[in-house]
Length: 450
Image (cartoon, rainbow, N blue to C red; front, side):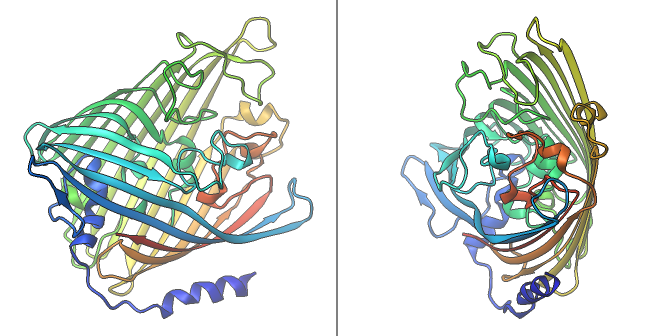
């Protein structure tokens, strides 16, 4: 197994890095800041503008990934199980532009991969995985009152929540190959609603009224009707960022190129949502003997992001609280879980175009959840990731080749117990399949954004 990983990782060193980033690549690099900070300053060749000042930009993100995992003991059939193969976790097509006025923008995006919207969630997904069928991600309009970055904006439709800092940064601009396990379990994901925000020189905030998002034992409510039993009655979320140094554009990714100026910010976010008070139906969860009549769900996070000349650092704490009320007559009446998580990661350029990175994440699952299944361990989880990225075009995420190795030091069984898991993320994102005491995951990915 080690020889295979070494041979594949060695491909990174042999890829040429010559080339120059054109205007289309500049647009791809800036795309992540669309959620809050700015609009692209340059238009790619496929930019279309009509006489009424309406416009359309087309962008594509594709990720081709090789995965190799080793699981040991636990509930697996033998002591060691090796799984490997190729996947396309993201094939995203996005349309951005203006609606008549340059102050009135829109975004519509679809993805045919399995890495978004809880597809194929541990083999028992809410959305069917491995189908190649496109799913709607973004569908929103945003009005910028001042027509530029600084000022108020109003956004409505379906969009990625920015409560979690990892999710506020575009999938193409992550430090590692993909987001952390913490983000996939506790991050709100996509939501439908309306948001009001403002960006100032040193501060930015956003408040949203929506239909909620992911939480522990709770899937995303994207693309659902207001009458759907999986839709939350109401969600209220917010995020506040305080920029200590640098420019807002520097926080559109985690990477800090050589020669970059110092930048730092502190952020905090929250999401409160409740379900079962108004919408019809009972939420049936296979982990509980009776249906959930109603529930309240809290998510909160505090984070710090720092960048300097060729290196970066990010730290975040995330907490969640769920309070279930079960239907009358069952063995359970109420039940609450509190979970906590800490994420640390950093990267540094060892050459102009090669960045090494490392990430350590740990999260604590409420002991009540573990004890309910009689498991002797599994409520503390520690996962370490180390990897390298070769940027095929200078200072651009438009073309890059990455390889990383992740290792789970603790049992993931408590996250994957039961015939249908709503807790362990889709393996196409993290690579972890669960039902094991220890697990090693190797990922190799080529990303193109144009």
